[in-house]
Image 1 (cartoon, rainbow, N blue to C red):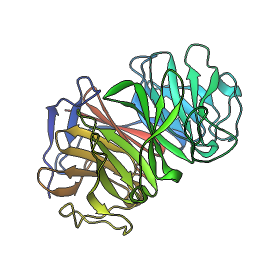
Image 2: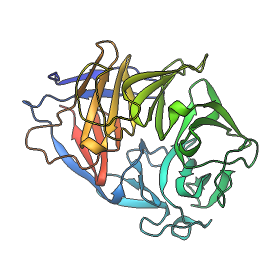
Image 3: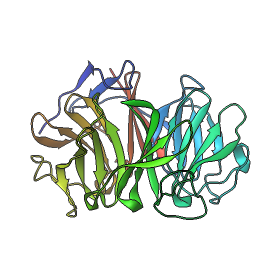
Image 4: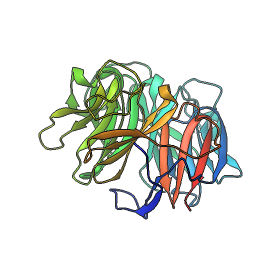
Length: 318
């Protein structure tokens, strides 16, 4: 399926002035290296504390960049561990997700330490928010327990609640923002190797797990296979049922029934059209270098940012 190059304003939950880029391979889009990193860029967000910057994960660190200079928020990209502290003194073991709950406070998934932590953007000081950073498990309450938490997101239906993809427990978890008390939204064997999530305006979730994309109803909590296969990996641009992915990771809602999926195992960004019952591949531009393990996507101010292995590339809208 050939993609059409458009720069089309749409409305998506939680996004302001978001623009979707559909990039036609016959019509190159300007591309630039936005930032170089030490590892895979798992997640990105517009920086609330430093408007104009992008916040992103870099292995064991959280960074912010304006496209020219990169600034350390917390951690050390090359030194894993567990330690509370300010900025470079803090240690994490693989930051796979985060969300900015305010200009000054960011909640991070310290994935291999099995807990959620916060960083104060003013002081740089970190603290444990939920979970036990010394022990993986499955438990509710406070501190609660997690096993490889990945994505952290604000619940569109409850501003005081976070949603966490608890990969090792095959569950979408909840955490109260005011207290850090952990609970469970849904737990199922269908969510084996659970990675990322996004929500539509009604709170329904789209999640990547195994080799597939699922929908979780917010009201009934019913889990439905949308695209791909639970266990069979591959690369097929076909109808939703027969399409195949290879380690689908980040998922972004870019319009009613339209999703972008990072497919790092295939070195692609995929476009899922629920209305047309079709999965296709985004052709970034003619002459561009091959994407390197694209895990994450961010559409912001008319440009698309692709988080890859050791770099973020920016594709500008025309």
